[in-house]
Amino acid sequence: MAELVDVVCHTCRIVLPLLDSPVGREAWWKFLDEHAYHQVELMWEHSEAQERIDIDYIEVGSDIRSDPSFAEYAGDWPGRPLALHPRPTARAVAEIVERAFAAMDADTWQAAPADAVAAERIMQHMDFAPPPGELVDDAAVLARLAAVQAALKQLRQASGEPVGEHLRTFLNDVLRALPTAADLPPDELRAESGPLASPRLWDTERALRLIQHLVAARIALP
Ligand SMILES: [Zn+2]
Picture 1 (cartoon, helix red, strand yellow):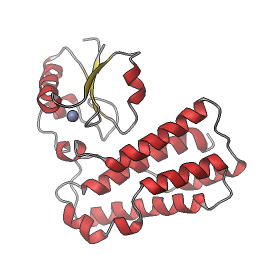
Picture 2: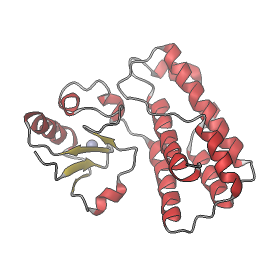
Picture 3: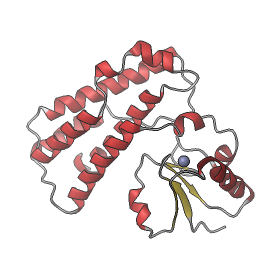
């Protein structure tokens, strides 16, 4: 039952560990059926492709609450239509986040004293881990939109503070990739939602989650 190989669809951003068990094989057949004509790759532990996997990728059977179990993935996973919907905003933000991580790893990222303070405040408004299968009503859509707007406001505010040049550039880049408040009209989002969340609301939440991950892991004080 050792888990040696993962298969990944880069088109849909989903990873399936290959398991030699009945449910593992069912999941594999489902994956073939669903992604055979997409950009699919096999990955070993040290494959270069591992570096392309960021936290926006959904991983079947992971311990992240929003990811499906093997049984859910092989069967009627309620979040499937939303999870496999393209996420253009999250992808654009993922590239910016990746560049920031790379600069930090290469020690070319220069932090300023104000960065951690700004990061702390941003983190108070960032708690995005939306499960794609969550059923939403109008009130839930509006509540999630309000959380998104609050996070966007914090990011914008932080970009105007005396943070370091690298953090400011990062914030300006992600703000350009993210929708503005005007791009997310409540009435349209409500109309697009039901029973699952509006795809662009979910895309924006996934993008914010990538930023949240970088800020929490590298910029905020431990
Ligand atoms: Zn796919």
